Length: 335
Ligand code: KG4
Ligand code: ZN
Image 1 (cartoon, rainbow, N blue to C red):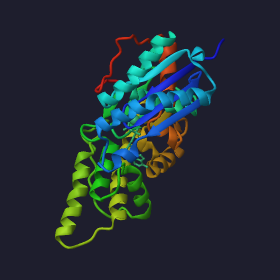
Image 2: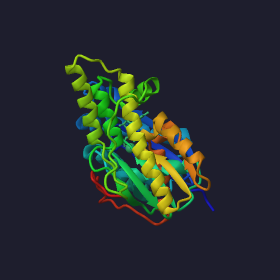
Image 3: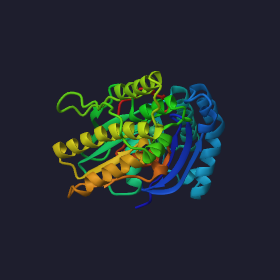
Image 4: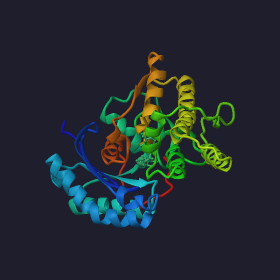
């Protein structure tokens, strides 16, 4: 009964990351090189710049992850890499690095869906108890995913337009806040009052889908109209009102899904899981519900990292999933 040691590699967006995980649950190392500073002045991620940074950083980051974990390639049972979704040029760097290392050292290769990774960040802090639902909220995704067992993902609801994090970033931009705007809106929201009336997109009865573009437009219109009338709106109150609207919909739909699907656990996942307002709203909602456990990963495991990719990769590896040397990047990959 030997331990399973997996090297994870993640380059789907603007973090170059590598990590070593033992038995799918224990972090031996988790190295993240963020490029945020390089993209900030453009107000968003510039794909070509992201790819170039990944090329520069990937080998160094992998070397550091192995060193920190005190392992060599002979100890690695599998290399797990994000194959999609994400920026194609960014993904290709990780996929190519993983294939080259797998080939050179004769190590099995496992392709991982980025969202599966976000969900499995939870397994690094808690046992997963099926059936469960994961609320995945990131810069590129807003999804409710039902899991009846390891490695099985059923999307029961998703955004029809903007992702939650994308809406945060766009609203932040209108308020002249730096990229990524989510944490700035979150901080402002704590200081303000939700005094402005903003819409909530509930969509059709029974739908678990989301929509945030209408809310984003409402925020922009509210600011614009106030400006024309010569009135000022406190950015704190606007942030608080926006955040309340996002959280109201996310929490209400999650609670509905929990009831309908009779789950044992709810896992929060993705970069927006770092949001203080969302965390406390979920915590108070689930404090009232017996028999359903709420798991929220620490901040460093919510945003993009490779530990989560290695955690998901371990499960897929144990299920017999294998990538081959024809593995490619899939920018629009379905989970
Ligand atoms: O998961 P992630 O690191 O990258 C993607 O896979 O998209 O998520 C990044 C997103 C960004 O949109 C960022 O603004 C948002 O997560 N975010 C937040 C907070 N921290 C990060 N949104 C709201 N509140 C936060 N505290
Ligand atoms: Zn992500």
